[in-house]
Amino acid sequence: MSEPILQARSLKAGYGGRAVLNGIDVSLRENEVLCLLGHNGAGKSTLIKSLFGLMAPSAGEVWVDGRKRTQASVRAATDAGIALVPEGRGVFPSLTVAEVLKLGLWSAKVPAAEHAARLDWVTTVLPAIKKFYAQRSGSLSGGQQQMVSIGRALLSRPRCLLMDEPSIGLAPKLFQDLLGPIRQLQQDTRMAILLVEQNVREALKVSDRVVVMKSGMLIREALPADLDTNAKLMELY
Ligand SMILES: Nc1ncnc2c1ncn2[C@@H]1O[C@H](COP(=O)(O)OP(=O)(O)OP(=O)(O)O)[C@@H](O)[C@H]1O
Image 1 (cartoon, rainbow, N blue to C red):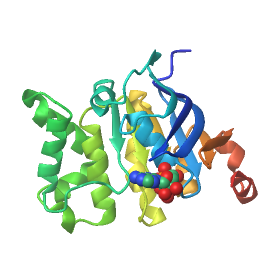
Image 2 (cartoon, rainbow, N blue to C red):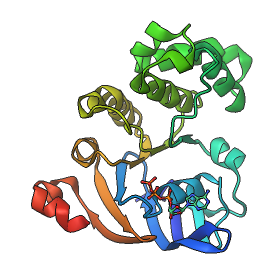
Image 3 (cartoon, protein in one colour):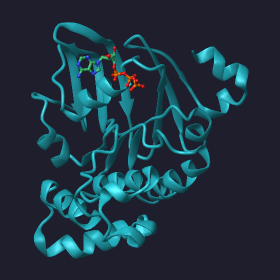
Image 4 (cartoon, rainbow, N blue to C red):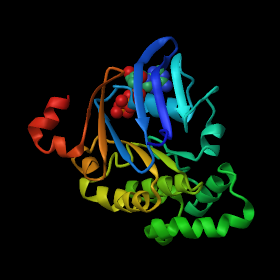
């Protein structure tokens, strides 16, 4: 089997000396959607931020493509083909969608000659974006903003996508509209996705494997099919 694209080994991290991650071991492989579940405050966002290089671990290691990362760096993560859909969307309300995506092209260091083709490609994956391309982001619905946030993350054509609660605040029926095209893209391209979700039932439908976090530890690993009843889901928490 090939090396994991992204791996945490005994990873510890926290804020101002307060430990949040208490030794996490997890691997994300090519061509899988790994669903990360856990209560509010379990440390899911902290794990995502640590894997992406937004936070330096206090102990333990992050490995990328079988090589130990020497320094937490978002630039290095982006260069390695990793992209983040952050919690809370992070689209600037006063900018139009076109402007948000142009900023995304710039920050992903996409060569200018490829900008048009890259934007075309993103709107092929998420065609709904075309409908509100010229609108200010602040005037969009939550689902539309989330689509822009996901589209922006795709601009670098990542091999590995980290998604922090992409469906938060959306009606459950919008989940598949938002995540369905991404699951399709993932299956077409063998991309790896780490998906943090509160919308457990819908998330399991687009996931290959599940890990559950509690108080900064991974307490369970399962397959979606193992969690096909309410009782089994309740056990996780
Ligand atoms: N920037 C920060 N500064 C200080 N403490 C933080 C910060 N961000 C998160 N925390 C704390 O770290 C703990 C874990 O938070 P984290 O956001 O990683 O959890 P989570 O599992 O993603 O939860 P949620 O589902 O609510 O987003 C919480 O106690 C939270 O209050």
